[in-house]
Image (cartoon, rainbow, N blue to C red; front, side, top):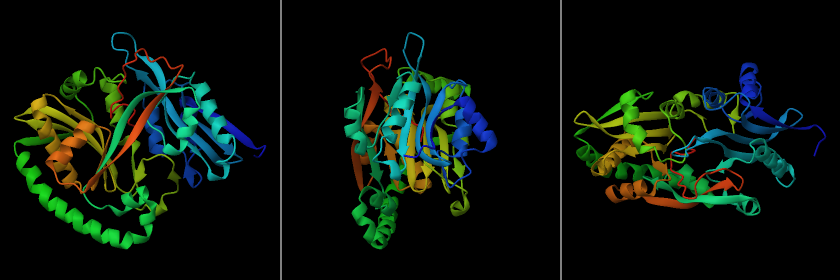
Length: 365
């Protein structure tokens, strides 16, 4: 590797200065959208000297990036403990077979005091983590529920289908229409007693509904924190994406990306809370909370009515109960399931051996 190599830990203070100077968004590739940076800076949980990432440069060229930032572990009866989420780990393809990836990774771990949580990781680095001092603290299924033969999604998962894109697009259009014709009247009939109050921020009455449902979460939830997590400032709409000056490693920029937050109402009473991100044809669920169990299926119906209205073609969720309820009540093409493991560094102070990593914990899509 070149002698002109720099590995830089990025604190919140440094990120603030980088935004002011437009430091990371001058080239064609950025570590994350500028909107994501502004969103991080608005998080009061992150202190000025806390680290938000580690970046590697060769000259002025970004060659590696680890995205991370601190959060608070819910210790139930005692004070929350600071931990760091390691969100992603990227190395330029020219340096895949060098020590750079391991070096920058160890640098990130040390900067956090080894208080690291990883919600999930790519299968191609499984052998790496097996040799590292990490422990599996949660194992769950990630469900992708298809309501059409979405060509882009299928090709992304099964690369051999690339040569059949034309035919897949035709099949996609036909299946999406048929599935919608079947599901739409069912959802409409089942939700006729419901109304939806769409919100941008939580007010007290909504937080009073949410708070008891999140009290045992892995991550400590407050009204301010959930408002931050659901804030649309983190996403950038690009109506003409090919003229946007950069692409970014982190999700957050597209010509159709937006978060929708809503209270599910029945007879003027909140029975559920739903938050989801729409990105192209995808609906990615952040929060799916139901008060009384008797209303669970009604809230599932509300989710599907929103999916149909937004013309989404597939759903992402780590919630097995929710996935099973959707496929039980509505017509789908198929559900792709993959095991995702949550890790913690062996020196991370977890405070409990019985941990559950829910869909909404560490969900920073």
